[in-house]
Image 1: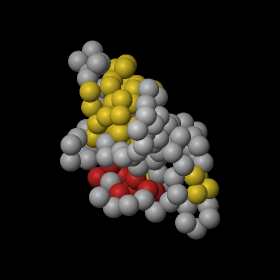
Image 2: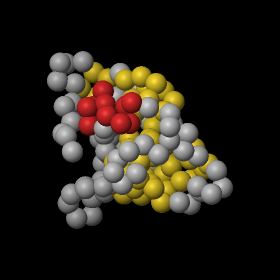
Image 3: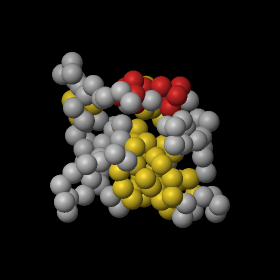
Image 4: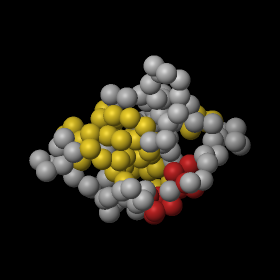
Length: 132
């Protein structure tokens, strides 16, 4: 997996509820843990744009609710800095459901995704409506 080019400030933690912006059937997911996170003992994971998380579907279609899935964070409210000096912030936090191979579950993504997602996960960016 390719590394992120920007210095993403990680502001999301476990137990955070995120809206799911794809058409997979989930409306809101809650973060349970992070995939590949290594930290200090007793300290929870901090997550930002480009992180893959294990989440539980909180609201959505009845067959999806309480299901444990993998999700990719595509937007965050807190601004972060790109290497060219530009600062990027979105108006909401958002996630997209992905498979074990990091392919999107849904066929379309409502709203834009960050450029860091397009570099690291090109299949996810291909089904989004735009890249910022």
